[in-house]
Amino acid sequence: MLDEILHRVETAHTLTKNEIVDLLTQTDTQALFEAADRVRQQFVGDGVYLRALIEFSNHCKNNCLYCGIRASNSHIPRYRLTQNQIVLTAQKAAGFGYKTIVLQSGEDVWFDTDKLCDIIREIKKLDVAVTLSVGEKKREEYAAYRQAGADRYLLRIETTDKNLYEKLDPGMSWDNRVRCLQDLKELGYEVGSGSLVGLPGQTLESLADDLLFFQKLPVDMAGIGPFIPHPQTPLAGEKSDGHFELALKMMAVMRLLLPDINIPATTAMETLHPQGRLLALQSGANVVMPNTTDTEFRPFYELYPGKICLGDSAEKCRGCVEEKIKSIGRYIASGKGSRGDYLKEK
Ligand code: SAH
Image 1 (cartoon, rainbow, N blue to C red):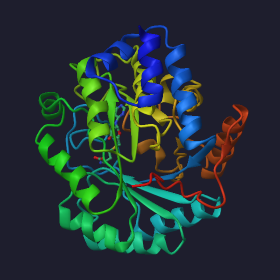
Image 2 (image 1 turned 180 degrees about the horizontal axis):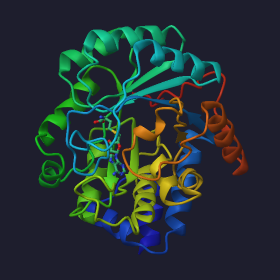
Image 3 (image 1 turned 90 degrees about the vertical axis):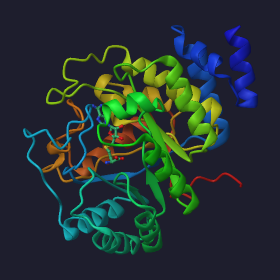
């Protein structure tokens, strides 16, 4: 039965909600992962795109129950890179050969539209793609960043279960998050979304809904992250058992449903499993986002505990990731097209 479903999705790329739940329930995952790996190879090839991640501020006005940098966490020192530091970090990353710079932060109101646009314009001079991941904004703000040169935007829906979302993200509206994703699409961004897997109260049915939501939008990229409880949050007592395996299955099914999108092997996967990112790359992923934030600040961007490579320089991270990618017979996508734009013919 499952073989039949897998065979069909591998060629037709559609599944019903029940079929997705069946696949996510599987304990024998080999056939699923192999099918996702074949589809990845057929549609996006063996090249792995590297994106340089800069975590430029851990100030956040929101209070998401799962997140270590939530406003109410008074235990972490807050930092904010200067405009100059951000641009210098991007220059260094471009010097290492990165073709995409990802600027991520908490929802920090100090970086108003003018400041962010200045930063985007400076970084665009480096002839790289710029991805923003700075949360929910007004449509006009998204339009201004785009005007300044931003190419892509990452905003995870986290969960498509509206009730669960609004319970875990107090004061935030699920409808507004969807509005943001739609605005971003309409403004011509390549849009990335994604989910957290293993949230308390989350069901397999709701995870299936997440995948159908990504297919419907459709997203150009999507990151699946296992939820890892942070000790200084209200969800400190939760467990992370099984989250890695479930996240990997979600990611593999996502590759089957959305064969040509960009899918990162997420850092949180490697926190839960020493080979997490390599296993992800062999189960559907085609992107890795090495951290290029200065090591002085890295420990403080603590979304979850146990973040990897805290003390490693940007140079070391790149070298290490390159080695790993080569060890599984894949290569770093470079040369023409190495920005890794989403290439679907519209
Ligand atoms: N402010 C930006 C960036 C958020 S941080 C935004 O709103 O998009 C990036 C991602 O970290 C979040 O989207 C969330 O999915 C993930 N994250 C937060 N807390 C986490 C946790 N405890 N475990 C795993 N991932 C987490």
